[in-house]
Amino acid sequence: MLAAVLGVSLAGCSSTGGLRAEQERAGRAAGGKAAVNTPRWTFAMVTHSGDGDTFWDIVQNGAQQAAVKDNIKFVYGHDKEAQRQSELVQSYIDQKVDGLIVSLAKPSAMKDVIAKAEKAGIPVITVNSGAEASKAFGALSHIGQDETVAGEAVGEELNKRGRKKALCVLHEQGNVGHEQRCDGAEKTFKGDLQKLYVEGTNMPDVQSSIESKLQSDSSIDAVVTLGAPFAPTAVKAKEQAGSKAEIDTFDLNAQVATGLKDGSLGFAVDQQPYLQGYEAVDLLWLYKYNSDVLGGGKPVLTGPQVITKKDAAALQEYTKRGTR
Image (cartoon, rainbow, N blue to C red; front, side, top):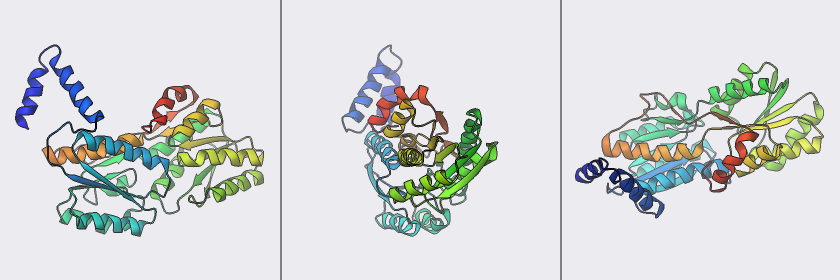
């Protein structure tokens, strides 16, 4: 391996060698072939996703692409119930995987099982949720956005748009990241922000709850959903309620990009989930191969990035292929 790395480094001294080597590596990855000859390690990712959440599809796309490049066997499990998520992690520990990637939406339920992974010598990287608990739990790094900072960005954007009363729709009770998003928005928003809790696994219930709230309070001029799949539902609720509220959202997918372009959505806050999956796998590989750790004990931030109508057209190509 060392000889191969030195060979690539020396090739980079010529006018074309480095470029050619990079093109060859990219070609191997695109063709489903590894760009390295390290052992065929197995990395498992376990998240708090429910079924059909497009956000986590994008995370997986990033993880799978990095896994191809790094000669990794990538396996994925998810459950929105914290106890079952913990049980999935335990199952991968029992299978003796070489690395774990875990989201910490409900950190207390994951603490003990992460400690078991460390005792078994399995390195752990946390992703997306639970940045505050990651280091304390002994994870190598946390990859995601600071949810409070992202919420603050939303509050500031609402101020720029002259909004006075906002509804923050939480679709998963007990998710610390969701609470932090709404609390961050409330911190910087100069108007009044209210929380609305809905059952995220039941879209008709989500729509009726938002619709009812908008019908009962016509002064609400902004609705903020905390996930891309809920934005189109909020748009339908607005239309049914006859409300003039602007619909905004956290996260991005193809539907959100289209909504931004046609004006049915005001703005989105992107945390770049593809990066979260890709970097989590890549950093585990770097740790296994070279004992590298990124972040210095601080979260590795992938967002927030506020996206508006002017950005939508450029992003549509990427959302359609499942990388944004």
